[in-house]
Image (cartoon, rainbow, N blue to C red; front, side, top):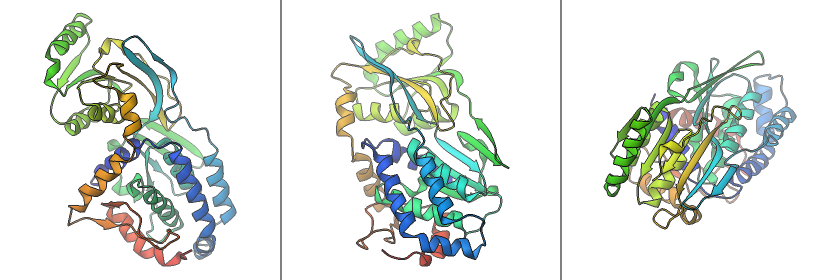
Length: 358
């Protein structure tokens, strides 16, 4: 599934953004765009003789917006003598939702933005020119305005979605919701990113062996390590590094219930309780020393990921897609430049003329 790489990249962009109330800012903007494009939405509703109204769309959006936001709300965060640690609700990852219902599409799009998951809608009745895809454009272009990848949200035909590649599958039929989430394996993984920690890793291997814990040492680039970890979803992972940039990304992007920096996996906890369909609990632990001061780095990191994204994608001559300006009040292009999935390109070209520039 070619779209999976785009989903993973979108997940990374959104989850490395340290901007206070970012999801609320995005959703407030989307609310204004829904209202501004009311006539176009009603035109599409009339065209397909849909049994919903614009009021239904707005109510569904507002109801989803009012749902409690759990994203990274700490539970028992504490500072010890040598380490910081805490348990956080974090996004599950790439979620696919099977539904043809426009209101369900809105609900899960809003939930995905609040929780920072990627949401792919799988439709057995897929039409490029549709109310669902019109909603997608409004949401996706709003994300781009805030330098969040449009690929955070997708709508694809059912046959193009390979469910086994997603972190969670949600099937909705006649109001019944069936959720299947990939379980965490019992495996432990240690990522040796910096050879300065040979002694510490040897001691850790000894500790884990003495406690009959199955573990694996992985090496290579950060991207390769995360690919391996996120494929197997081990219960616990650790990284040994002196690079706060690498440590920050590792903590945010490793899909594991325990994610540690330069600390023993024996501190892992069983965190089996799921908060809801958008989150799982992740324990993090990292040194309070100066070598990896994530608190300070956390404050400084804002903005770096979008700058990197723009720079990297400008060099891709074959697949660069400039942001369109149909939702920009000043008729200027948005700052985000990215590779957009081909399904979105097609539906955008078919639907964009319905929108009125405001």
